[in-house]
Amino acid sequence: MPGLQQLLSYRLSVVSSLLSRAQLKRFGPLSDLTGPEWRVLVLVHTYAPLSVKALSKQAGIDFGQASRLVSRMCELGHVVKTPTDDGRQVNLLLTPSGKALQRKLWTAAMACNNTFLSVLTNAQKDALFTGLDALASALKADLAREESPPRRSARPAGKR
Image (tube, rainbow, N blue to C red; front, side, top):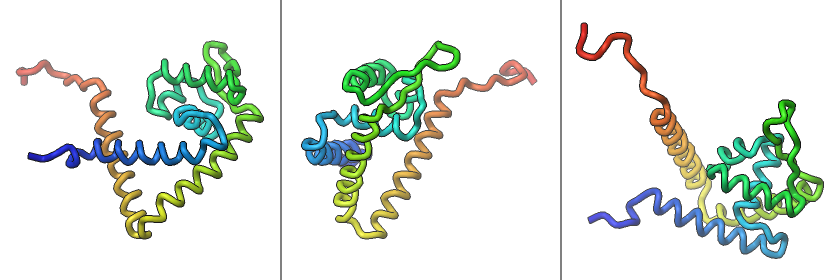
């Protein structure tokens, strides 16, 4: 009988958790942000200006969690909400302190990334990234098919 180790989702989850824990351990002296808070910082830096809804989609988290994270980052003074032209939403931007913290943490993240990847050969790195990209593309396509409403035929079923 196949074990849990045979499930791709399980193995990726374990590696992801270990990577996050190792990276946060290195970030400890630099910041008291949690992993999700750090991701908000990076995503706002990368995609600003963006709405909370867009942030939740980019981060792969639900809107409520994204909203709570944004509120926390605003309280810490790293993110600011600015009204949009129509006034129905807000856009998120980094404050000067948020930009400085993002630069500092990004430098540390890249150093960690390079350390983690150093255990792989160049061929293994290429295969890993190629495989992850292929999986992501296939999963996005699969989810898009499931989320799309079924197409209706012009003719009623059973009639020719």
